[in-house]
Length: 252
Length: 248
Image 1 (cartoon, rainbow over the protein chains, first blue to last red):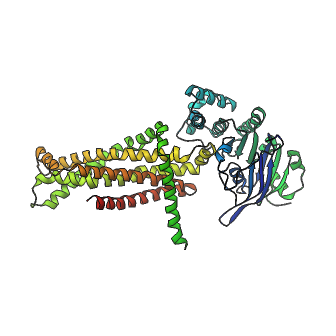
Image 2 (image 1 turned 180 degrees about the vertical axis):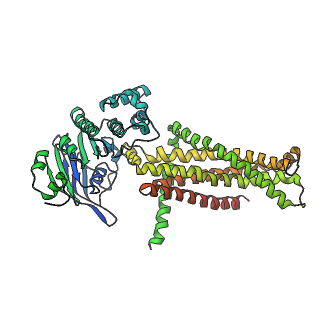
């Protein structure tokens, strides 16, 4: 695919759970190498968008296109190949509790690269930990021994272990203190700068959104009602966007 | 209509899951560490509990046999009764019922909690097949560990029966052993082992199945755990009937 092809494209995406319609008609495009932040109210369907992008959910309507390949159709069977090009940081980190941090990073790499030796895997785990500014010793810690911020960093190290081209972040700063949240924001910027990844970040933390985004899209009642740069969103007069970014209880 | 369709849907899901596991069986030996870890967890760590319940299974069987015999059958046949009943029936069934509570519930709670914390999604994102890396080691671990546990349980229950016969009913050790060997048929042992094999499969499979279907939150995990124990116990007793009916 050429460099102009969007990395991720959502076309009229629709999704319902029972009688509840979460996504009505979402149109969204993430360009190659950019960081696109999706903002919106809690429970509004932001995480559902991410799960569609990585093939964890299939849409009721519309299409998900990743690097020119439509992954949402029922006859698309090669979701594994697409997933190996992606990494995802989950809201609660989702580290495997029964494994230490190093094993969490090495597990998938070992299974997909049986030719790698344990020494090589160890070196890879240390390198990935260093990329998220954690010392090598952190690989020996169990998830229960890690703080919230460290868990997210180990989970990010795990997400980049397979050298993905696309990184999805689900509420990366939720539940963290402002200083640790800023460390995570810097890491998101590092990943874009050093690895050249395309990033999709779902958040309702506007400080984080302004810092990491090339573009910000707002999801409201199942539709994208705004898409623009951080400066454009600050200047918009869309009442729903203004209500959200200013944290107002009522529309003004 | 929904009442009729829901059980069929569930049966379909169980069949698909079971077939998925069968297809992946050869892959289990590619990750022997995961299999050994589960066998240790289910087998070795359940051993103290199995030892304790088995002593009492044997002892109660001996007391019941003595009561049923009254003065019609000599006490020398106490060993026969204990051996027959423990090997074919009480050893595999009671051990399985206790392990359904210990192992099955632990699997359901663990998998349900992994689902709740998005660890199953994380596995899918990392292109790690949960059936291969999560279900297979647990189900195969149960299949291999349970017959071994039941053999231990049978031996300890025989000792429990011997202790009661020796000290309560004043039967000599030689008399008890003679009774045990009298009418002993290796076929009974095979039936007991086949039962334990099937029960191990049922317990671990139902634990995984209900864990995967767990609803959200602590309540969802709690319900999944309860369903795994109840369905395992019912299936153990139903399977027990069909195995005994077929075997004898």
